[in-house]
Length: 463
Image 1 (spheres, one colour):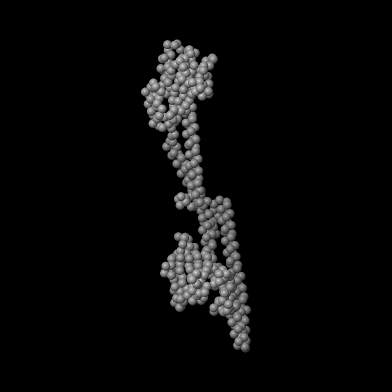
Image 2: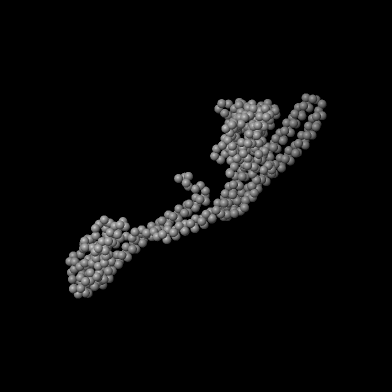
């Protein structure tokens, strides 16, 4: 059932409103049918009671010899009249005082005659009373075929001659009817409401979707144009806040980059001057140490600037097949003698990245594997919504306590402090900066059978 339920907010709201409309319409029709049934039954009962009162008045005023003719004329397929010595409605069966008073008021005699009224339901299979005319028999059979519950109304009115006018009538509850015009009207109304809701919800949902797409692109480091203010007031305020946030972030990155660029320029000048002065030192050993220290400082300044800039670059974002990019990197290192291979079962995935920056990040991971583990095996895995680049070496690994620490700037686990073996300690920091800028993640773990495993996770591009 969950698979059949729509996932978009627009469809869910539309389905919810239409379901509420259907339930409300169903309740309305049910109440209408019930009220209609009660109204029809009340009308039939009043009609029978009125006829009974009129016949009773006529019998009181007419000569005795005309009474049989009056009864024959009053009989109909729905109502039967008879003049008997006893009432067919026993005093204990009389249960409808209101109808009795209504009949007494219509008769208008003084004193008012005794009137007994009994109303009861009759089982559909019950046979009609004996002596029922053929037409009434046919109506009885029709009620049985409609599978409705007939209602029998019996009236006994006392006549001044000491006889009782007995009246029996039988009518059925009207069957539930749903006219095609009612169904068509509901269908047209539902379609019009659905169309209006679909357009109105589109005006609400479209800005939300644009905002979600823009947020996702911004999280991947892409340049996002300022969003147009559209939709209700709350959405306009949210979009305006997003635009302001994006402007502030861009300004912050640009200011930081300019500051560090100026700092790097200012540092290079005194370092160059120191290098020139160091060359003038007469003692060869002292001169060599000074030059080595100055070169290390220059390299650290360059690496620091590169790390600080992060993804603050003008390189455009492109849609790239990741397997091709990784295969090129592997081939590039293999040509220079590196023991690196790409797993043949590697998957492929289309990603939105800055190719040069991503090549730099993956190159750093491969070079670290070759430097500390002597060999590297690269594999690409893919699952729902993401692709994973896994670089594994055969080295000694890293202590578990340092797996997260090595991503910090200037952290080097290699204790010799040699730039040839330990670098500047910014390689993995740069890798994480680049991967985070693409909306991804990079983690390190030790393999159970030895070696370090670096896993880069990147979101797949929406096709």
